Amino acid sequence: MTLPKQVRIGSILYKVEAEEALIAKAEGSTGYCNNTRAVIGIDASLADDIAHEVLTHEVVEAINYQLQLGLTHTQIAGVAFLLSDITL
Image (cartoon, rainbow, N blue to C red):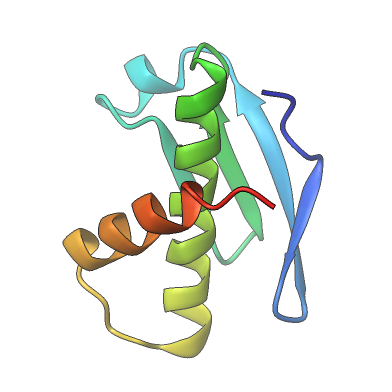
């Protein structure tokens, strides 16, 4: 998957970065969302479909943070899984 260079979530523009060896550096994590820096990182080695799902997951993380929804990680993962299956 070609990752977008940025995504707008609400009024905030997040930079999207493909990171080499993120899984090793982040103890198994395939992605992250840093809301204070407005950066989403995705492991560069992921297959396209997995990278798409991880990006969707991190977008839901950002929405949860911005709207102070208080979703659990399990709820975030579930919403992201369903949203990543939508083809427009």
